Image (cartoon, rainbow, N blue to C red; front, side):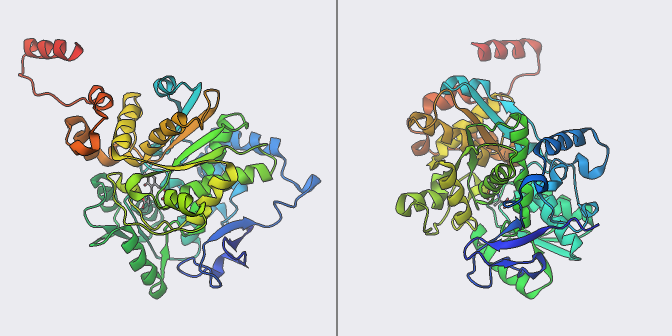
Length: 451
Ligand code: F0G
């Protein structure tokens, strides 16, 4: 059976091509912009021809109890909304998705809002949200007969790609900026058998090199310019809507790097509304690090119409990106949903990360920009106490243990960066103390720590 119902539509000029016509760099031959997967007729279907929302909601929930491989994936259990494969039997899955939605009670109280949640995409098989996109795009690669896949990465994409490629029996090539990714992520690419090259460049430089390579060699590009990645990455929107019993939260806050994830989540909610599965879309806000904030600048300078690349610098290495590929898509999502785009400082990121850690969840630095951003939005009066807010946590805390340890030891931030933030930082710090190996010494130290 052919389950494939999609075509690709250029986000810039609107021209349509079939999936197999896409160029190796996934850029439009007419205007150079990126494509979006489109399912013909969804918007126009009327009456009996329209999918039955009640039946779909029932089916998706029912699949959570199924023992079928594709049903156990939190991406493929929604497969009616991502018919991109000739056969769903070709899906390469590590049982990604179905991630937890946690209440953030202490942060909600501190911020004076009633309902605050963390959708923890770091609880995916390789520890980041990239798995949901990778299962989709790598399955396409395998179905189309590619032997090699490749990506440029700040670490998480490469970890996910290497794992899914290994499961599918494909070879994978990783290009990463030398010395600028967290060790946890690099170790994953090695463990899953990728060929890993560290380039003396930044992420944007790695993308440039890889874009040329895929035009010369039969290698399938798995960066998020590949529109199939976004089809998988839109599925957390379905999970969030399902968790809210199909009435969505008021506000979703997402970190912004290459800006594919915010684009994908916007697409996911938009499609749910088009199909009559939800009646409204949450506001979607994108938060960047101050040192890697090209979209924030774009909104300030041109309302999100033009983007000037920046030289990126932040300790949240996952989002150390100065020339984001999907900025036009993300800008539209922010504008269309009435969200905001703002940036946060290194100290604000570090504090927010420690606060999420102190709630027993933890996340990687790039994910913590969401809580830091929410604090700013609350201070600016842009989020009301009665609004329900979901923070999208994109990566697991163990991805970048060096960052966490440096924060707790007090060696992460420069005095200049932490200036004025000491009252927030000090109570959060929990350095590991050296104690003599006797019960008396441990009890004495415990008494000191409890005071
Ligand atoms: N959070 C984490 C943990 C990430 O790894 C990334 C991106 C983002 C947020 C930003 O998402 O790019 O869709 O806006 N990491 C990419 C990588 C670029 O190569 O792993 P985005």
